[in-house]
Image 1 (cartoon, rainbow, N blue to C red):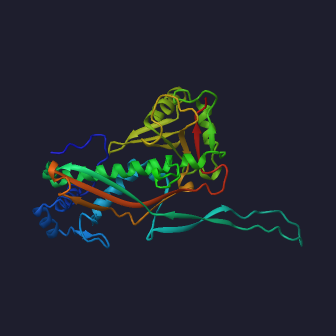
Image 2 (cartoon, rainbow, N blue to C red; image 1 turned 120 degrees about the horizontal axis):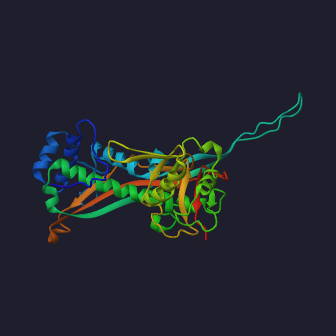
Image 3 (cartoon, rainbow, N blue to C red; image 1 turned 180 degrees about the vertical axis):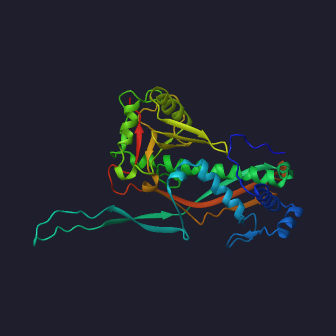
Length: 352
């Protein structure tokens, strides 16, 4: 029987969780050629729907069932720090343009009969282009001999964690190159702005940051962004900065959720964890160390109807008695600073 990692969020929770996991497990087994699971799916209303314009399982793929997509979304929204904070929008096309406010109306005092000073809305546009995220993995055929519910839980977790990891990497660290499919992350967008806050001289490790550094990065965002703001850091940043400072002056609360994850806050603002943020104890001179702010005001994640496409092949890895699993999704991430300097999110940069 599969042994899921104890520190991972369960993909299927709540009423009928085992049943929903079993549905997804039988769906995976049917794609792998299991006749009994295919018959089970047909008998229990689990559709094996081809993706649009796709002729074969290997060349194209199958649209994932609702229970699988819902579980994927649940995990990504729980463990993906960037997705937790950003504005998430659906898209029905490969490209989309949405208005962005860069400036607003101005109120002025005036006297009776005098001409009123005119102001206008200032808008530009944020364009998004759907980018294809893909996973290709090998699995032993023995994996598909496990119980349907365990198989569904395991594969859903693995796929969701992989997608969440890539989303965080692009959202925080993207440099606009092909490595990130052209996505420019917060680090790149904030560089050179007033929201790029330098720590005190020589403060380039999490153990050297002090309360003044923390206060300065909080002051690096506009007042309107304070409601809804959060801290974005790694486990090392959390332990060596927030926990250390809280041991001296307080300000940190942390409780364990029913699913095993931690609900933490520092100075009244939630702490969101990402493995894609700096997770080392050594020098981070000239590099972003942590972020603070309201991602919903600075960043948008646009996805193609939250739909996952999965395909499997028993032939390509036949000599190794393995099955190839491919999963794809389409989305785009845009970090738009809105023409405001400082903006809705600030980053703390280590100094030499």
